[in-house]
Image 1 (cartoon, rainbow, N blue to C red):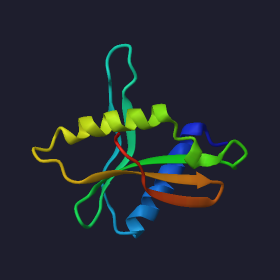
Image 2 (cartoon, rainbow, N blue to C red; image 1 turned 45 degrees about the vertical axis):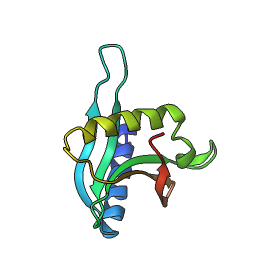
Image 3 (cartoon, helix red, strand yellow; image 1 turned 60 degrees about the vertical axis):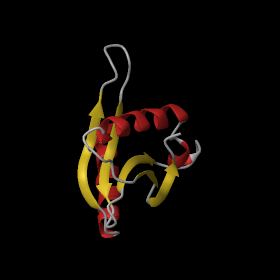
Length: 122
């Protein structure tokens, strides 16, 4: 019996393999940042780089089916805010940050959908 974490890790593995086949290169996996002692920070599942140098922050969502709206719709406004927060912290390591974007890989059952530039940092 797989745990929720096992299923999530499996989904990330599947998403990473898909993105690598598309030519992206893994930079970092599961980048986490704290916001403070009582505030939640954020986590970026995958940080990859496109051939053109664009840094891609990827949120991987997996659902067994689409009964509750599916994986893509589960990326809430709060989740997007946490991803943007983590990405801003990540980009602090660069003197001159590269172009970047936020992608979502949604896995519903066996169906995988890669949503490029799924949302912005606004």
